[in-house]
Image (cartoon, rainbow, N blue to C red; front, side, top):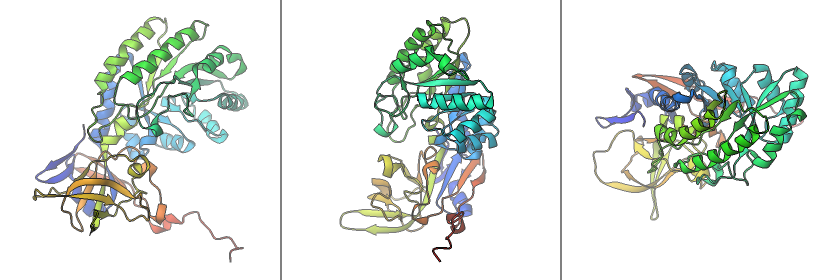
Length: 425
């Protein structure tokens, strides 16, 4: 599952001791395992090799250049959702024809940049977006490949903030409206609307919602193609779950066993093969990273035992934002058998500033270090400088070697780009 293991009471990332990395880099920091990143990608690529799927890692989960370059070198494409992610994707050396662009609010500048780069596909979410891309494509004298993001109105049974395939969601186009778009393509002369995209949510542990959604979409596409429209791309999104606590999510192979029969039946009806695309994010990134933080104080009250650490909600916001669970482990295992019911909290001036609540932890002291597990996805990418706290470094391990792949910010970085106007004095 991942490559963070104890050896002789010390937590290691692959062959590197986490405490040695902390001595060199200071705390807090994010730590990524190269072996876990590549291993998870390879599991999914192998599971769907029979349909020659293009795996486009979803950058929003973790967009560090070293992280995405690792995947690009494995053959991965990239799923982007902003102009900044396009910039990063190209800097990481991703071939433009392996880049797909999602998101409900692409602006004209971002669309133009993606057109100039020559990306594979836009995943389009509304008619106004289609009109905008068509206008910019006409101006640039280009014909652009488009995939409509379909909203199948299927409940993925996950957290409401990461549910994206129900009709109440801001994402996607309902099937009736999509049918009109596919069959009236003359309205958009600079677009080839020949793709379909479906992504129903994130952290989905069961295969059932996927099967329900994909069956609905594939049946819909049969109706579309009966009208003479050729579907060339089928993007089935992401959503595969990671293990944070006691989840028992399907493996890549188990997922493939549920989905491949649907795809092969769909392909079997056609003379020309449809290109299959997947967009995993959390599945690849989550278990590949941890967040390492050091105890500053231990505060004992009549009501609670608070372990105050140097990491905070601005560094890892998922517990505060989603009430998300991350396992917390000591970097050095305690020899004592007794534990203390504790909250792990940070220095930010918010009651919502916590990394873990009501955990049985060893009796900790100032200077002890904790590893917040499964922090590789939506950890650093969602971090901020709230309370004027510089963002932490990111470090990658391969074997017994480690490298800082993003430097710790300084106080000067906090005010970079700011100025006091003359009228303030």
